[in-house]
Image 1 (cartoon, rainbow, N blue to C red):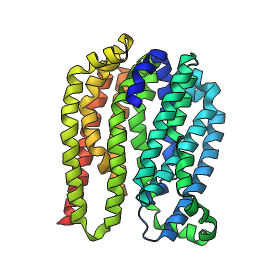
Image 2 (cartoon, one colour; image 1 turned 30 degrees about the vertical axis):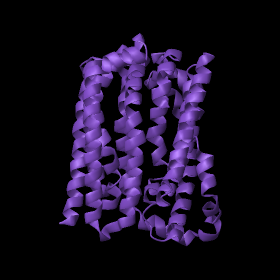
Image 3 (spheres, rainbow, N blue to C red; image 1 turned 120 degrees about the vertical axis):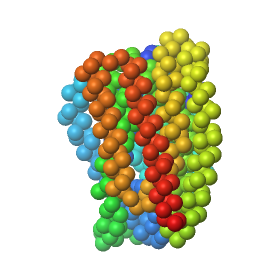
Length: 397
């Protein structure tokens, strides 16, 4: 649905509008995973439901407190923050960023609970509902030329759509929270899974920052127009990664968590099979995009989006490695090697920030900037895949 709507949206909204959306969405995606202190990632792991329910309650508490803090900070610093990104147009809509952080964090929490329950059907249904809501809102507002607000509201629908439905699916379990939760149990689960806030909070920030920072730096250096072109390229390429790779990662994580450390050879076999199949899909698709990206974007999205096609062609190697690696990243939790994940993301963030500083200091072209980003990310995702597979293989041996 997202792919089908893009040719129409690219004619209803300008590259500058997509540039505003890019900064809006990137800000939400960087902040939202942090408000739960990443305890949410531990939900599939506890053997006892009582422990998991207390962990769920702990996450709810951190999310509400985190969103209040985000709202307070943005309320004070919204003007200098958005002016630094050349996005003054977003100042009246700063409160939508806070709302986006809230619904995104809650939806992630509930999908991880669904992953624990191995209820993939409800995740799929809410994904479809999110796509329907996003397309309807963006197209409806675009037809009435209400821009860029239509893109912002559509983005909120894509992040929080289906939240009520997935909560209703587990309403009986949620009603048990007051009777099963106690301060003592909350302290116990917070201590038992303390590795997640210690290591995964900075790791998650660095990971999402690295994913979203090209759009933020592009906005600061090249302006809204170029950022919109880059945003459309990344948005189009992210659809298969998020839809197939992301959901396969959740399923792989749930299966590996169910197997546990008692049978690492089974986890290794599943991981290896998943990786081979993803590579078999990604390589031909990436090669096709590399050769035809400019032609495809110009004819599908319109002539003004030709540069986005050139960007997509340059990014195709990175997307291949990201698509193949996406499900494996979830297994870092099974390996209980949070420090390694932190170190990996520190290295990636360092090289990305260094490349952005060079682009700014040396006044590099946007094309050189995109090629450098594609190379760094290709090396990173290849390294992550190799690290996870080798780590699991060592457990088997």
